[in-house]
Image 1: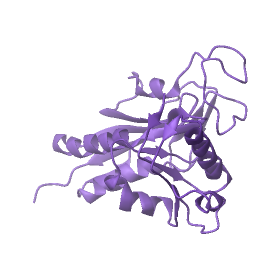
Image 2: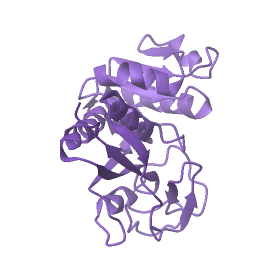
Image 3: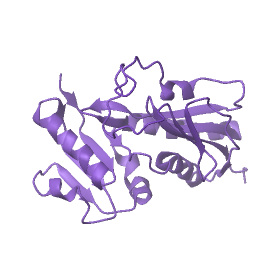
Length: 237
């Protein structure tokens, strides 16, 4: 079966981003992926992914800061396009959603500490969120997260993305916005742009309901970033 994705946006053109581009092109060569363009976002014009742009017209490098590029371009991407997030990057999409709320004149403030999630690896990030993982070992960036874990050699009984969507008595959230980064092809995990746009629409629609506390997370089956955000609509003039 051939997966058809008009455009893929790879965040980061360094060694990891270049490896994603390599795998996407391999998938296309094998007939597993049909795509018109692979956009790599990196502020370094000499990043490793440039090598692929020189030999394949589908690959294009856009030199920009990640957040600046998302602000200028994410709205315009099609619903069938996919984003390839950077491995353990700052929580770019949560920041983007917060900026979308600010554009609508809402006030965005930290939503408080998150209750522990009871996963093997759990660390508080600099912004007060949580970095989470079911792995206490180093996973390759192109792991496909199969049902049988390549490290333990045992069935994988967990899915962090699904767990974060579940309501917990210790979490007082009005909504959970979980952006799943799941395996697409040849070891590359992606987030459908349609899911990102839907999260933004929920945030903007929520402004009609008054202050709302959100859990915002980007997660695969094994790894993820999460934090709480309080979004308060502007008072009517």
